[in-house]
Structures are given as C-alpha cells and as structure tokens.
Amino acid sequence: MTTYAQVLLIAIPFFVVLIIIEGSYGWFVNRQTFRSFDTISSLSSGITNLLKTVLGLTLVIVGYTWMYEHMALIHIEATWLVYVISFLLIDFAGYIKHFLSHRVNYFWNEHVIHHSSEEFNLACALRQTISEFFTIGAFLLIPAALIGMSPVVIATIAPIHLFLQFWYHTQHIPKLGWVEYILVTPSQHRVHHAINPEYLDKNMGQIFPWWDRMFGTFQEELKDVPCVYGIKKPAQTWNPVLINFQHIWILIQDAWRTKDWKAKFTIWFKPTGWRPADVAVKYPIEVITNPFDQIKYSTPASRWLHAWSWVQMTIALLLLLFMLYNFEAIGFPGLFAYGAILFLHVYAYTTLMDLNKYAIYLELLKCAAGMYWISESGDWFGLNAFVAEGSLLLMGYFLVSVLVVLGFTLWELKSVQISLNSNLKS
Image (cartoon, rainbow, N blue to C red; front, side, top):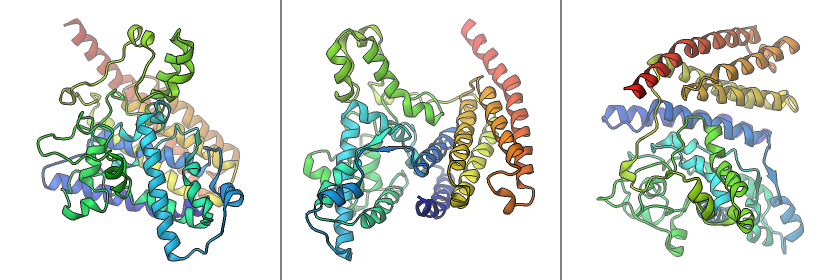
C-alpha cells in the first residue's frame, strides 16, 4: 500500500492539472462544462475513495494472490506479452463487473456515485465508490490465475488500467473517426453517462469497445439526441458520502417494509431499480422519465460560501497529499485517526454546501478531534518535521474554520431559510 500511495502522489497533481486545463479551455471557448459545487463534490468524492483505498477498508473475499497460489495450472514468465494479455484480461473483467453494476440492484449501489454528477467533465471521473463493502473483483480474473499470471503483473497493470479511464470524461473532444473502433472514446463514454432512453446502460467498456460490440451493449452518440447526464433518481445533495449510500438505503427500507418474504431476500439481486410491488405503491419514488425535464440540483449559496468551499476542498486535498507523502512514517493505527478526521472534514464542508444546519455540529466535531490530536501528541502526524510549527498553523486553521462555519450558519443559512419560507407563503 505504501507503493500505491507513492503512485498517487504523482497521479493526483496530474489529474488536477488536467481538470484545470479543461476548465480553462471551457471558459476560453465559452462552453463551460463545470459548475462550482458539482466540481467540489466530484473532487471530494475522489478524496474519500482514495482514503478508503489506501487504508484498506474493503473486505477482499478472495484475493488474486490466493487464487494464483491455489488454482494456477502452470506458472508463466512475466514477459511483455504477458503484460499485454493481463491488460486484456483485466479489461474484460472490468467490462463484466461494469455490466453487473448497471444490471443488479446491489452492485448499482457501488457504482451510482460515478453517475451522480449532472455534468460530464474530467472531475466527474473522480466520483468513485466508498460503498463497496466487499470486493469480488478477483473472481473475474480466474482465467488469469489459472494460467499462472503473476500477482506482480496484475498489481502493476491494474492501476494503469484504472488511470487510463480518466481522459475520456470530457465534452470537448468530438468523435475520433477510426479510433472509435479501437478505444473507448469521449463520445462513447458520454453515451454511457447519459440518462436518455436511447443511451441507458450502454457502452460498458473501459478501455476497449470490442466487448460492447460483441455482447450488444454498444450505442453510438447520436447527433439529434444530446446527452443528458446524471441518474434517473437525482441525488439532490453535494455530499459524496450520502450519495454513496442512498441506493442501498432504499433497498434496506424496501426489504424491511415489504410483506413479500421472498422479495426481502431477492431484492438485492433483482434488476437495478426493481422494487416489491406493495412497497412501490405505498412509497413511490420520483424518477426522471423524460431526460429533457431534468432540473439540475443547486443550492442558493453566496459567492462567499462558494469561495470558502473551494478553500475547504483545497485543504482536504493538501491534507491527503501529506498523508500519502508521510504514509509510512505515520503508520497504523495513526493512519486510521488521520483518515477519520479527513473524512469528517469532507463530510462537514459538503454538508454546508447543501445549506444544512447540521454542518456546524460536524465542523465542531472535526475541529475538536483535530485540536485534541495536536494537543495530545504535540504534532500533526509529523508535520512539524516538514513545516516549522506546522501543527500550530493547523490548530489556528481549526479555530478559524469553526468561526467561519458558525458565521455561515448564523447568517447565510438563516437568510436562505427566511427566503424559502417567504416563497412558500406567497
């Protein structure tokens, strides 16, 4: 995991620079595909996903190494051809898992965060799951294990395969001619993220579009059908943690409420969106049937709150980068404490973006936890070794952050509530 943390130290700044370039280009050509809070929510989702990943908080039912050691019929040398074959196998396994994520209720919960943005840009590529309680991904690589493909090869290729899926999340690159037959392109992936009936659950391929063409899930982007992005049941929040668990909460409620005992156990494996008949009638859920009727989620926040939210997200990113840089020195269980405070930080400021009054309590809890850690240890996980009196600076930030959020709670949130009440009365 230390090696992966070092890889992320290079990858994260690279992704951020590309996002800035895309945003700048959109402004220059007067076709902006970013919205402030939506972008912050996307970046924050990426932060929470990386936190969970580097802390190893997903239960691996069966790991690839175990399958390799117990199932391999032969062992093959790690030549360049083996790396190519492993890339193809990982891509095919990714297609199958992606397909299941769109077709099975339970697995959709692990994937819904990626589709939750109502924009389509490089930032939304970072909307990755934290709701994957256990992973069965290794099962999909049984063919690789059988032919004795080394775990080192898989571990090397897997992150490369993942990072190569970043570039095609953009609206600024048109169709690419003959390339459309060789690689998954922005045009194909725009279709995948759209909720138009013509496009729904299409183009599951991650690097190569061959699987979609072979198994009937391919759909070309149509000139007369502009893509509408998001999910059919809009998330209605900027908080990536809440988005991650919205769908499974519906499944839990439906399983509890239904009087059909069979449905209580089968709902998890039914097609995505399936609900027991009795619950669907009694507890209807509004979904978008006509994509062109979509009203994008927004909150009436001031420019000051937008600016403050960007400050908070930037601090979250800097804290994450320091955690990755000093990963080995912090060690466990310190990394769990660090991750918990950072996770709470993201939860707090995205709750404020939703103009939720509970943001102040979350902020107080976060800052109290951070200040307690500094006062007890005399340092912020080794920060003083890199920045003189760094922990004192961070202590000052915690204090200022509480006061600023308190100010937004007392004035902005209150004025918004007054305005809403006034509109309701009129």
